[in-house]
Image 1 (cartoon, rainbow, N blue to C red):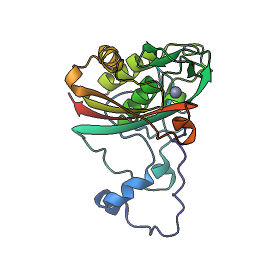
Image 2 (tube, protein in one colour):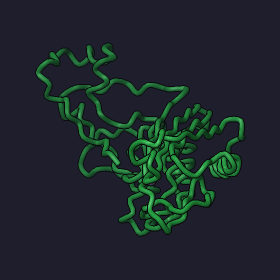
Image 3 (cartoon, protein in one colour):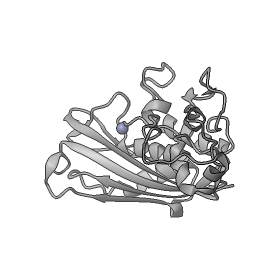
Length: 239
Ligand SMILES: [Zn+2]
């Protein structure tokens, strides 16, 4: 799971210094401020005072330092976005003798996911998509298994927490589109159960939650029944 809090472009010699007011007018300057977009929640708000690093109380999220201020630049005003889009990806290795849990449903198979938690590849990537839409770090940073609160937790807990963060940020779910990639077993007999379970966790109507599945044409670990992956895109709408 990739970290998201590493500003790298501040010292670029190709970026000319201009008057602070000019930064507000230039959209490309926004890329200088590598921080979560403020969306009206304690977990997400941009903070100007750096030491000590503020943390969101509910999940212990480290708020990214105001690197724009560190570079002597004024940050642009926060955009008020009616929609936010997020993408999630996850992959787990399949090992014999483990249960295969997809979207909270136990899918009969000769192997399952190797993971600290229940290895639910779909729920993990749905969580990452929601967190991504909110401009938050990924699931491993928000819910570290080194924290006793999350260690060994069922993946449904992470979905509920992500949904809670979404509502705290002032957003509701628009729609979810997920694609599972696995060679075996066939998911068609389980798709509706998976979708129904995911709808329950998200508090969403089935018409806005789509689950697709495809093989990997028998190539690479996904196609050789050695791993399973999922992609998810979510749209959030301001309430
Ligand atoms: Zn995972």
